[in-house]
Amino acid sequence: MSRYYKTVQGHTALENRQFNLNVRQRRLLLLIGTEDFNKLSDQFRRKIASPELLEQLEAMGLIQSQMPLSSNTTSKLETKITSSISMVSRQNELANVQDSIHHQVRTNQEYRVSNDTIQQQQVEITPMAMMAFEEIKTFMAETLSSHCGLLARQLLEQIKNASNVKQLKICQMQWITHLQETRIPPQQLNQQLQQVNFALQHLQLEQ
Image (tube, rainbow, N blue to C red):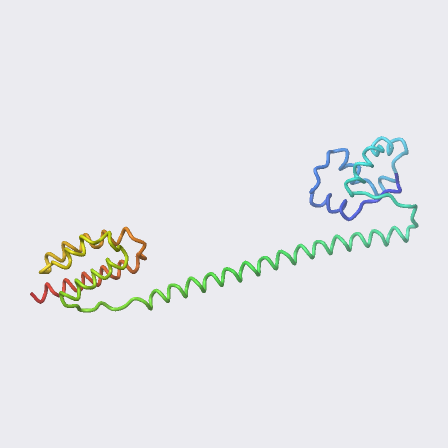
């Protein structure tokens, strides 16, 4: 039984508990390749290291049999195993660092896109314009035709026939209700509503 040694995967399994080992399997894996195991009596070693358990650990790739080795060769093997484990740890650490960098890059890109969108929306906002009565009617009619089509045919006729600010303000209530049911962006809808309100208020002041 002293001809068995732990593989790199065996060392990793003990460190990370990635294998669902039972108590007997884990105890044997811990002892294999150690001086404590070699100091045990033959009878006790046969008890805790049954051929069945050894086959199970070997089948999982956690231990491997070897020819009798000199102390110098054993030392080199242990050094090689330790080096392999360290390499795996460094690779995992590097992968975590790369993931962190990629996440930060994505976050920065999303922030820039969001910021650019906000700036673009701010640029698109135009100052309120003073409009004559007929210009307001045309503006409301064109907006309805563009977003509502034939569904707003009756309201379009009412806007066309409005002859004063009071009648047009009544149409305005239906106008905003129609537009709210479309896919027009909320910011654009709010801007158009403010434009109509501003123009109508300006006309009322002039009367």
